[in-house]
Image (cartoon, rainbow, N blue to C red; front, top):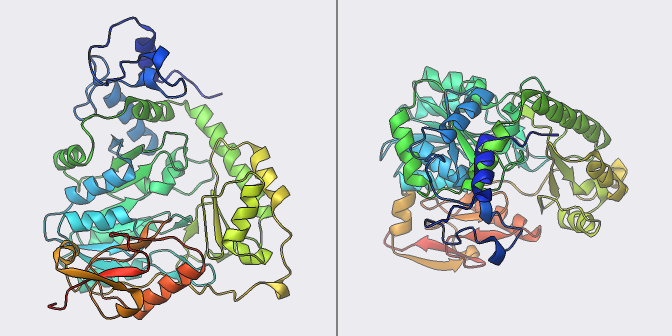
Length: 476
């Protein structure tokens, strides 16, 4: 069993059991008799004496973040209660100045694009490899970064995502070496990979923290047992100014951090090494068995790992290929839900199942009980190549922020080709923009929209106009 003796959680329990009258925030005043019993009101406090201050840590939170840094191997770890989104905004801002040129992987999360917008940066987009059979982004190849640095010698930062939402890893060590040779830091969005460094030597790939990245952002809630909205930002090496980073964390995080969220992070990093090793080793072995049983049913197979287009895979993500069952992704997901299995998402022919270290073996065994019988190879539904492709981004006709400030009007997608977009358009999940402000509306974008719509994908935009896009005015 895991330990429940995390220092912050123990202190919060002690306060909850005391009879001290709470003449302070928050306003529920831990009035247990009048509050819903299944919400953590008893642990929800403000920065009382003895409970430290996230923005000026000198006690229990400082000690906990030092344990986190030691666990993952960074020089410093910062708890974030505004999720990986807040950490990414702070990290990008800390490593750039207004107007800087930056190298940004095309498949970054929307929060990175928002950081580019807020900081007035000039992005040069790095296109990861495309895996046509899976219809998903592959790895960002080091040669792509090297070429971009030649074409944009003024760049001051490189931002990449590894692992991706679906579990594709890039060669972070090679990317870091390339970026540092050009004198720029590397920020890695490892939101989906906190488990990679939670226990060294447990059979998972290495975390970017130990592979040369300068800042690494991890969501502790995505694949580890921390509460939703918890994240950690790791500072590694000497290319990041600690004072500037800490200031930006204060800018992009609430001044009233949630103690239940902080306590869940403290609990996670306070678990003894032997428990972490047993837990993670058992999970990795379970995943070996599951992936063996899924052979031929996955859109991302271990056989696709080739060192370039697909450098490596995070085994915790099971990306089912619905075509193998003669179904669409939504039809397969509906079947799973009817048998009490809730997938992470379903789109086109891909159904993503996220496993986690505390999953009981019976949970994955149940998966195979309810999956339909796969088709023979000669009866597969449709083409083996996906009709969808994430559209490329070209040179920015206008900076993101400036494009959103221009006079603009809404028009049907079909009438917008060749115009300059004045809003974000994305599919959710996974939250990667299909088009960003300042980009031209291209035929490739319209084809991607059509493919996603036909597949039942949910399109969203800044202005929320279904079937339409907001474009900059004629005077441009």
